[in-house]
Amino acid sequence: MKATAIVTVRNEGAFLLEWLAHHRAVGFSDFLVFSNDCQDGTDAMLDRLAALGWLTHMPNPGPHAKGPQWQALAAADRHPLVRGADWLMHLDIDEFLNIHTGDGRLPALLSACPGATGFALTWRMFGNGGVDAIADRPVAETFLRAAPEVLHWPWRAQLIKTLFANDGSFGRLGVHRPRNLRPGAAPAWVDGSGRPLPPGFVQGRVFTDPGSAPYALAQINHYALGSMQGYLVKADRGRANREAGAFDLGYWVDRNFADVEDRTILRMAAVSAPLRAALHADPVLGPLHRAAVDWRRARFAALMAEEPWRALYGRLKMTPPSRALPPAEAEAIRRMGAPPPR
View: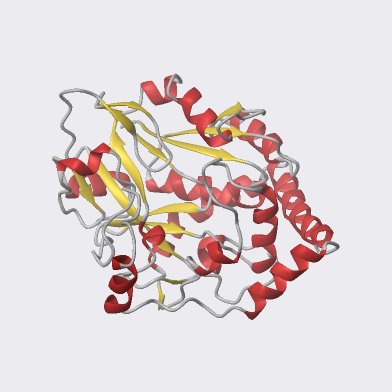
C-alpha cells in the first residue's frame, strides 16, 4: 500500500525528525514536503533526507498569492507521489496521527472500517502544560495533557484532517479535506470512531460535531502551542494559510486544554524511537537539527527586545489552562449567533 503524507514547513527543523520518524512508524510510505523561506536550516535538512531516500523535497519559494500552503497543495495535485498513491493525507508538522485500534498503524485503521474511503479524524488539542523554555525534547513525550474526549466548545478545536482513498472522487487536495467532489462520486466517510458520516459531510465540512466523542479508532494529536517561548517564535513566523487568523492570545486560549492525561501515542515509540535515533546519528542531520534548536532560542531572544512580544509572553505566563465549558454553557453561546462555517 502506498500512502503519501503531504506537509508544508517553514523553520521547523527542530521538530522535523520526530515527525517523520513517527509517521513512518505509523505506516506512511512516502512524504512530499514543501519548504518556503527557511532561516533555521530546515531546507538543508530536507535536502539531506531526500538524498537518504526518506522523502521528496519541493522548494516552494514566495511570493505566495494565497499563502504558501495553498500554493504547495496546488503543486502537489500534479505530483507523481500524489497521483500514484493509494491513500493521501495532508498534515502539518504539529499534527501527529495517533491510531488507537490494532497495532497503531494504517493497515489496522483501514481494516477497522473496510468499506470506508475516507477517515475524517478530529484534532485533540494538547495544551502547553506550563512548559516555558524551548528544549530539545520530543514533542509527543513533552506535552501529555489534552482536551477531554467530549469537548463542547470551541468548534475550532473540533477541526479534522482527512485520510482518504485516492480513488478519483475529488479533484483537488485541501488543507483539512480534499476538495472538488466529482459528479457521481459517493465517498464513504467515517469519523475517528468509525461512525458513518452523512453524504453532505464530504461536500466541504471541516469539523466534527462538538460533543461527539470522535476518538475511538484514531485522533490527530495537535500540539498547536508547544512551549511558551516556542509559541512566540511560531507567532513570529506567521500562518501558512493566508485566510487564517494570527497566532495571538485568543489562538492560545482556544487550544490550551489540560483536562486529561493522554499518553496513547507513546506506544509507537518502540518503532519510531530507533528511526529517530538513526536520523539524529547522521553526520549531516544531527548538527543541522541542533542548529535549528539553537536558532529558535536565538530568535526568541531577539523577539524579547520588542515590547509587543514581551507583552504577549507575559500574558501567556499569566494565563491558566483553558476551562472546558459544560454542555449548557457551550450550547448557549452557539444559540447567540450564526452557526460556525461548515
